[in-house]
Amino acid sequence: MKRGHINVISLGCSKNLVDSERLLRQLQAAGYTVEHDPRRVNGEIVVVNTCGFIADAQQESIDTILALGQAKREGRIRRLYVMGCLAERFMADLTAELPEVDKFYGKFNWSDLLADLGHAWRDDLADERVLTTPKHYAYLKISEGCNRLCAFCAIPLITGRHKSLPIERVLAQVERLTAQGVKEFNVIAQDLSSYGLDLYGEMRLPELVDCMAQIPGVEWIRLHYAYPTQFPWELLPVMAQRDNVCNYLDIALQHISDPVLRNMRRHITGEETRNLVERLRREAPGIHLRTTLMVGFPGEGDEEFDELLEFVKETRFERMGAFAYSEEAGTFAASHYADDTPGEVKQQRLQMLMEVQEAISQEIQNEKVGRTLRVIIDREEPEHYVGRTEWDSPEVDPEVLIGKTQPLNVGEFYPVVIDQALPFELLAHATVAP
Image (cartoon, rainbow, N blue to C red; front, side, top):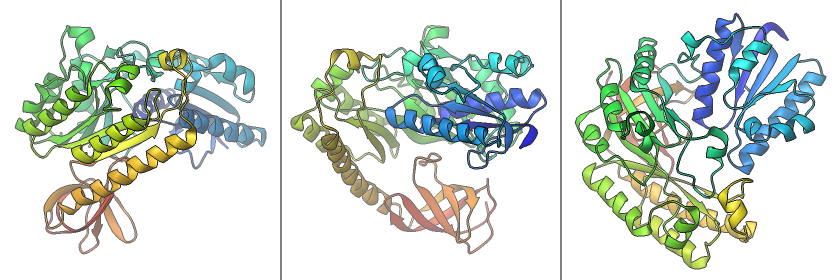
């Protein structure tokens, strides 16, 4: 156990990771040695930033807390604190059931944690972070919360209403991070489409992205978690005009069947969804769309699932993830609908959907064979370098494995020729230095 050493373990999404990085900066400024490594817990104090989105994520958080509680009993750590979404949502229950935790904190009251450690929260460092990602890329959270109130989603119960970070503060973060060597910015929010509405009375995402693109040192900007309703179409000309805005968009559609979309309270129809995808591809040729779909939501029978399956076959998403519906306490769906689709049926549907997507992904990947693509190198492994194209977000999208025919530097861009395609990987060789 290292005295004066704090481990922060971040679970769940990249938005949570940004919160952990901000907390790490505050702890560092308070004089602690900080670390972010769940595989090697050796600090005197451990802070777990939990996820509370769906059942699997909640269970991962609980399992992590229980394992750390055992480490505390064995004397390998001295204090254990828990914060984040799960703690925000189930504070009373967790406090009663997990006495090994010294204290629980919610999603936003980090200043209380600092105070309990004998230090004050520093407002002048509120937007500074200790990056836990490779130094060449970072996640950039531009808003918190959500006003959409989808029937299945507990996020608004945890994070509250949508709140945008002012443009000038976002741009100041980008300038600070580029000065530290960050080249790639993955812009994240629960609802990118609504950015600016609460502050300026209008959607300002296109303006923000355009301003970011003009900052020296910004090589890639990639956009995550747009909402399909009231999409800010002015974004697409910015994507076309600015070479450093990746031709990529993460936009969760969830379903295509009208009855299911109504039950989900998505405020969009299947036809409008199809028109949205068609327009995105028409106005941004070559765009790679990432979406998320849900199976087993109340109202999805065999007919509705078949429609979803056909939609995936017809639309041919470049990137797609899916998950099975799980009822979340406090949501509209939990109080208004019966979760009456058996779990095995949900899993069968999920497997069918992903098998279709794997074949589509293979075909789309095949189209890249023989092409020269620009990649950024994320890491070096014994047999190859691992990179990504502009269409590949860290952690969730395919990677490019580049043979070691010449030395490459992590964090640099290179042109590579694609030699072979797998459903979720490309094999390539480098041509020349950047």
